[in-house]
Length: 240
Image (cartoon, rainbow, N blue to C red; front, side):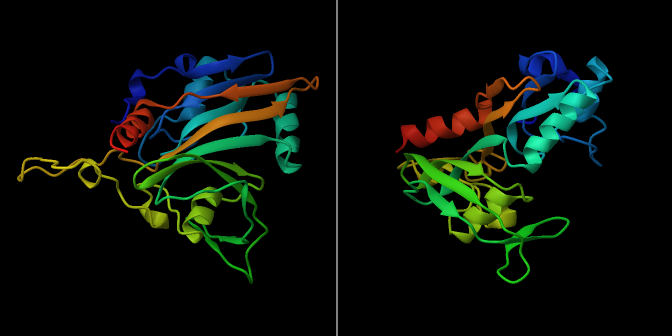
């Protein structure tokens, strides 16, 4: 269920804070920056608390998890340099279709990006590199972790789709909705009612980030799953 933006305060999303950075756990369905549909977004919520806040990177609107904010210009530049030098480690969790035993799997297909989508393109694509590992196998799905070494748009989603492992409920990249009736024997629902999917968004969560503060100290943050992602995993385990 989508959370009402008007009821969210930036402070309640904070999971780590020091004099330079604030890490928050972004709920799904909230845009990182300006959005044509909603007046509020993460950056506007942050600036209600502190006008100096700058967002260091973004997540897709449906994706949940860690987002880093800088409290001053020096901190913002410091994080941007680490991103450019590929020194920021970001770990994502996703639930994908099918059973896949990824053991430090390296997806290195070049990606060509348009304004709305990325695709594997061996002629005009830019170098792209994602490390993928299996966390848990279910009856028809797999929980995985992904480390995008490069930072192309929709990189994880495009690489997984290319390897025939699309994320649940990601129609842009071939991922279908997942229903309880596909797992539970003798599942019954009222014929005149449409069955609800087990999760109503792309099943992708930014779980962990690791980077260095201005003074060189390592900052490591971990974001808990939101309710919809936790419920999905609970159902998959129950009917495994």
